[in-house]
Length: 429
Image 1 (cartoon, rainbow, N blue to C red):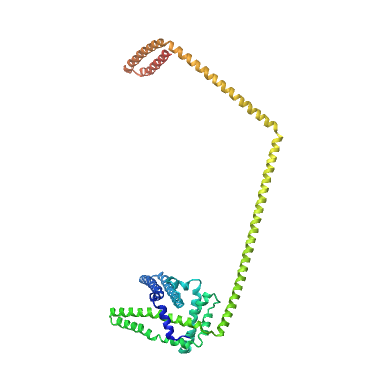
Image 2: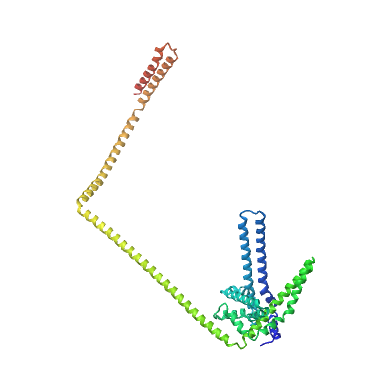
């Protein structure tokens, strides 16, 4: 087993030239999470102030929703912080092994391939077991924390090796692997106490300066505190990863091999049960598909039978109609003869119409010739008629200008007009 100085030197050599990466892997996702938490918390606080300013009956519902939103935000931040810290821890372990992860891979490692359930289970059970032991005494509780400290590292190797994983298997393995090495791990962690006191001192100074209203120096001390944590956390975690890497190359107790065998058997049984379950599900699906296919086939057969029956009915009706038509051939022949005679009569009628139109045209030509032969006579007659009409018009005007001598004179005027009209008509004729 390596000494603590050798482990620290191994961690320093791994981090040499990779300090920006080591700080960014942990603190960049953490800062993003802090910013998101602060923004959402500010929005919730504004909504809370708006709801409490104008308090109404509906404000109770709004307040309930605000409290629920705050709890959901707190849970989200808690789970995200666990995933980010676990991803950074695994990134430092890969760095010790000579592999450098990207920022995206390290930040999202815990949230891929259903890993977060196992990681959260290991963290939660470790905390519960440690707290239960600390209820008895602080020192036994801290020693149990040392025993369970390698659970996350063991979980990573088991997940990547596709071994049987349970919530407590990683913790049990860690407890077995740390037998005889808890003291070494405790001294290794204790050796970082001096490094941890530096950022703690800067934090205390920042608080004291804020209280004394020296804001500038307080911000400076707070920046030094954050810088100290940014350097200390990757250094300590990388040293812990080096300790685990050295621990797995040591001789392991037989109990670990027995535990791994049990886990392998349990995994085989789980795989068998899962295979049986999948087989049963597949059989059920196949049976359902077969039943569905049979129903569809029956429907198609019934449809074909209906179509055949319909065609047979149509064929029977056609045969009956043809038979009826064959029994009455005379009526059809008479109808055909009538159609032929009507078609023969049509050209005869058209010929007669053409002859009549020609005769009418000849008569019209003869009448025009006769009218042109006697133009002068018609002109003299028209002149005479015009003179006579003028004379009658003058007479009528004179009769109208005469004064009315009673009812007899008024009754005579329309008679004279009617007589003049009759004379004009006779002269024109």
